[in-house]
Length: 429
Ligand code: SF4
Image 1 (cartoon, rainbow, N blue to C red):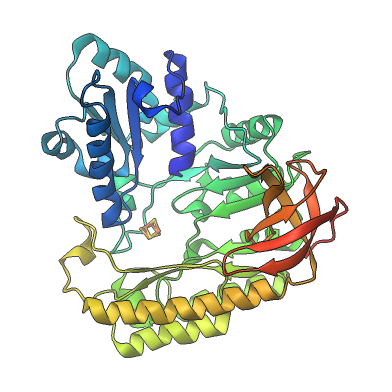
Image 2: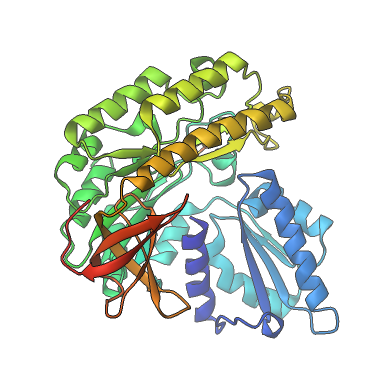
């Protein structure tokens, strides 16, 4: 979502005359669009500002703006801790960035703008066309979350659930496709909770996008198991542009831990969603997120997670050790032993890597459908992704970025597949 927001921030600042520079020391303004999901991310912001400070030691100080969820969570504290920061803007206020910069230029007074004004934000954004022109483009449809998982900052930094107007999203999708997008990734902190006027659900969006000419692939992220409704599952049956990889975070395989996390689902419910998906489309695969070492996690709880992982056989998944976020209920709980958590994480990651390895090996000497996203800097190879998001690097003399290609896979490593472009006639795999 930060990539989407950064792009929109650029669209907004270009209206008041700013343009991007790749030469750092030429910049008049830095916007650091931040993430607050892990503790490290917050410290990285201060490190980055330290680097800007150093680079501009003997030059005119640039305007320094911190936007995003760290700005929301830390608010004025940021300006106090690091006076080099001139402006702090929350993720639901960034549509005001143009006026705020102009104000700052006039008055030279520090600005802290962290109101939740998500309706105003999207009303403002709809007036400015999205200049993103990547083959695979993000499109925010929903923001915020009402689930309040005990480890998560999103309900506090992005605010309550808000669904953008249906027509506004379709207009933006059509604009992205006219700009060259061939894949659209619908975004939301709780994307499958999308519900506009109790009439339009995520399934309505997918079915409408499925009819957009020249759009080849649709994905969405991130989903909550509780919101995997029947109408959404049914899209996997007959929307041919909807890719068969579903990112469905479970966080833990232990019902005790899921309850303590306030996840509002248990492992049986999660498994029932996967069963339903497999019933409507046997090609679906699942990726997930896992938190290891959540307060109170015992060996037995961790083994429940390992057992669930074996059962589902996840691909392309993410796993982390629990990181307490200030202000969340779980931040007050007694931390697990870090050494133990590290051992568990390693064990889980080895298992997930084995599945990934097995998954990648299945492609060997096979042809698979790849959406070509760009040509690599070496000018000889191209980059694209399979229907399951696995990166593919391949050699080709003559192929077009944006086309669906038929790639013969000749080798692989843990993360990537490598192959040769044979023809643009696609056989789905
Ligand atoms: S559902 Fe997702 S975004 Fe919402 S509180 Fe839980 S982890 Fe955070």
